[in-house]
Image 1 (cartoon, rainbow, N blue to C red):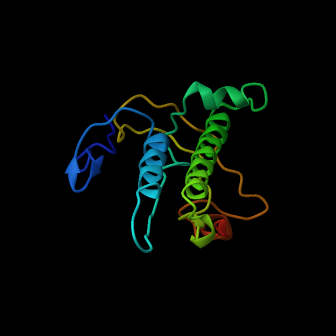
Image 2: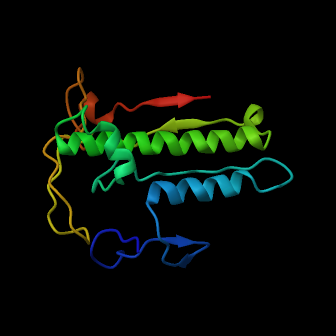
Amino acid sequence: MHQYKKGPFRQTWHRDDELFDEEGHSTELFAQQAIRWIETKRDGPFFIYVAFTAVHVPLQEPDEWLSRYEEKIKTPSRRHFAACATHMDDAIGRMLAALDRSGQRDNTLIIFTSDNGGQKRWQPKGKYPGEYFPCPVLADNRPLRGWKAEVYEGGVRVPTLVS
Protein backbone atom coordinates (compact mmCIF):
# COMPACT_ATOMS: atom_id res chain seq x y z
CA MET A 1 0.00 0.00 0.00
CA HIS A 2 1.26 3.47 -0.84
CA GLN A 3 0.91 5.86 2.05
CA TYR A 4 2.17 9.35 2.62
CA LYS A 5 2.73 11.06 5.96
CA LYS A 6 0.82 9.98 9.05
CA GLY A 7 -2.43 11.85 9.59
CA PRO A 8 -5.66 12.56 7.73
CA PHE A 9 -4.04 12.46 4.27
CA ARG A 10 -2.08 9.26 4.83
CA GLN A 11 -3.78 7.37 2.01
CA THR A 12 -3.18 9.31 -1.20
CA TRP A 13 -2.89 6.71 -3.99
CA HIS A 14 -5.84 7.31 -6.27
CA ARG A 15 -7.05 7.23 -9.85
CA ASP A 16 -10.13 9.00 -11.20
CA ASP A 17 -10.90 10.35 -7.71
CA GLU A 18 -11.00 6.85 -6.20
CA LEU A 19 -8.56 5.76 -3.48
CA PHE A 20 -7.11 2.28 -4.02
CA ASP A 21 -4.15 0.03 -3.24
CA GLU A 22 -1.60 -0.94 -5.88
CA GLU A 23 1.59 -2.97 -5.53
CA GLY A 24 4.88 -1.66 -6.90
CA HIS A 25 7.39 1.16 -6.64
CA SER A 26 5.86 4.60 -7.25
CA THR A 27 8.37 5.46 -10.02
CA GLU A 28 7.34 2.35 -11.94
CA LEU A 29 3.63 2.90 -11.36
CA PHE A 30 3.78 6.54 -12.52
CA ALA A 31 5.67 5.55 -15.66
CA GLN A 32 3.35 2.62 -16.45
CA GLN A 33 0.26 4.83 -16.15
CA ALA A 34 1.84 7.56 -18.30
CA ILE A 35 2.82 5.03 -20.98
CA ARG A 36 -0.73 3.61 -21.01
CA TRP A 37 -2.04 7.15 -21.49
CA ILE A 38 0.49 7.98 -24.23
CA GLU A 39 -0.34 4.80 -26.14
CA THR A 40 -4.13 5.35 -25.95
CA LYS A 41 -5.55 6.20 -29.37
CA ARG A 42 -7.26 9.59 -29.42
CA ASP A 43 -8.13 12.43 -31.75
CA GLY A 44 -6.43 15.72 -31.09
CA PRO A 45 -3.80 16.91 -28.67
CA PHE A 46 -3.45 15.86 -25.05
CA PHE A 47 -1.77 17.09 -21.89
CA ILE A 48 -0.06 14.78 -19.44
CA TYR A 49 1.65 15.89 -16.23
CA VAL A 50 3.83 13.26 -14.55
CA ALA A 51 4.92 14.37 -11.07
CA PHE A 52 7.40 11.72 -9.99
CA THR A 53 8.09 11.59 -6.27
CA ALA A 54 11.74 10.89 -7.18
CA VAL A 55 14.20 12.21 -6.20
CA HIS A 56 12.65 12.66 -2.77
CA VAL A 57 12.83 11.26 0.72
CA PRO A 58 12.06 8.83 2.11
CA LEU A 59 14.34 6.91 -0.27
CA GLN A 60 13.49 3.26 -0.92
CA GLU A 61 15.08 2.06 -4.13
CA PRO A 62 15.01 -1.59 -5.24
CA ASP A 63 18.30 -3.51 -5.38
CA GLU A 64 18.12 -3.44 -9.19
CA TRP A 65 18.94 0.28 -9.02
CA LEU A 66 21.09 0.34 -5.88
CA SER A 67 23.45 -2.36 -7.13
CA ARG A 68 24.62 -0.09 -9.96
CA TYR A 69 26.30 2.16 -7.39
CA GLU A 70 27.45 -0.42 -4.82
CA GLU A 71 31.15 -0.07 -5.70
CA LYS A 72 30.97 3.51 -6.94
CA ILE A 73 29.35 5.41 -4.04
CA LYS A 74 30.26 4.52 -0.47
CA THR A 75 27.79 6.74 1.44
CA PRO A 76 24.47 4.83 1.66
CA SER A 77 22.24 7.91 1.42
CA ARG A 78 24.11 9.22 -1.65
CA ARG A 79 23.93 5.73 -3.20
CA HIS A 80 20.14 5.69 -2.70
CA PHE A 81 19.90 9.24 -4.08
CA ALA A 82 21.81 8.27 -7.24
CA ALA A 83 19.75 5.09 -7.64
CA CYS A 84 16.55 7.10 -7.29
CA ALA A 85 17.64 9.56 -10.00
CA THR A 86 18.71 6.72 -12.30
CA HIS A 87 15.42 4.90 -11.77
CA MET A 88 13.47 8.05 -12.70
CA ASP A 89 15.72 8.66 -15.72
CA ASP A 90 14.98 5.14 -16.97
CA ALA A 91 11.24 5.67 -16.49
CA ILE A 92 11.36 8.93 -18.47
CA GLY A 93 13.26 7.13 -21.22
CA ARG A 94 10.50 4.52 -21.43
CA MET A 95 7.89 7.29 -21.66
CA LEU A 96 9.84 8.92 -24.52
CA ALA A 97 10.07 5.54 -26.25
CA ALA A 98 6.28 5.26 -26.00
CA LEU A 99 5.96 8.64 -27.72
CA ASP A 100 8.28 7.34 -30.47
CA ARG A 101 6.35 4.06 -30.88
CA SER A 102 3.03 5.90 -31.10
CA GLY A 103 4.38 8.41 -33.65
CA GLN A 104 3.74 11.38 -31.37
CA ARG A 105 7.28 12.44 -30.45
CA ASP A 106 7.73 15.02 -33.23
CA ASN A 107 4.49 16.74 -32.24
CA THR A 108 5.02 16.75 -28.46
CA LEU A 109 6.42 19.47 -26.22
CA ILE A 110 8.28 17.89 -23.30
CA ILE A 111 9.27 19.96 -20.27
CA PHE A 112 11.36 18.50 -17.45
CA THR A 113 11.84 20.57 -14.31
CA SER A 114 11.86 20.39 -10.53
CA ASP A 115 10.14 22.27 -7.74
CA ASN A 116 13.18 23.11 -5.60
CA GLY A 117 16.92 22.74 -5.23
CA GLY A 118 18.60 19.73 -3.68
CA GLN A 119 18.05 18.68 -0.09
CA LYS A 120 21.12 18.63 2.16
CA ARG A 121 20.13 15.86 4.60
CA TRP A 122 17.10 14.09 6.04
CA GLN A 123 16.39 12.51 9.38
CA PRO A 124 13.27 10.32 9.76
CA LYS A 125 11.11 11.72 12.55
CA GLY A 126 8.23 9.27 12.52
CA LYS A 127 5.85 11.20 10.28
CA TYR A 128 6.17 8.68 7.45
CA PRO A 129 4.70 5.18 7.87
CA GLY A 130 7.32 2.44 7.59
CA GLU A 131 10.97 2.06 8.51
CA TYR A 132 13.43 4.54 7.03
CA PHE A 133 17.11 5.25 7.50
CA PRO A 134 18.76 8.62 8.18
CA CYS A 135 20.25 10.39 5.16
CA PRO A 136 23.09 12.61 6.43
CA VAL A 137 24.16 13.51 2.87
CA LEU A 138 21.82 13.77 -0.13
CA ALA A 139 22.21 16.36 -2.89
CA ASP A 140 25.30 18.28 -3.92
CA ASN A 141 24.40 21.82 -4.96
CA ARG A 142 27.97 23.02 -5.55
CA PRO A 143 28.96 25.59 -6.65
CA LEU A 144 25.68 27.14 -5.49
CA ARG A 145 25.00 28.22 -1.92
CA GLY A 146 21.92 26.96 -0.10
CA TRP A 147 19.55 24.00 -0.03
CA LYS A 148 15.88 23.08 -0.46
CA ALA A 149 13.65 25.46 1.58
CA GLU A 150 16.26 28.25 1.46
CA VAL A 151 16.16 31.32 -0.77
CA TYR A 152 19.78 31.04 -1.93
CA GLU A 153 20.42 29.73 -5.45
CA GLY A 154 21.00 26.18 -4.23
CA GLY A 155 17.45 26.14 -2.89
CA VAL A 156 15.62 27.77 -5.78
CA ARG A 157 17.64 27.12 -8.94
CA VAL A 158 16.38 23.98 -10.66
CA PRO A 159 17.18 22.07 -13.83
CA THR A 160 14.81 22.65 -16.73
CA LEU A 161 14.97 20.92 -20.09
CA VAL A 162 12.65 21.59 -23.01
CA SER A 163 12.41 19.33 -26.03
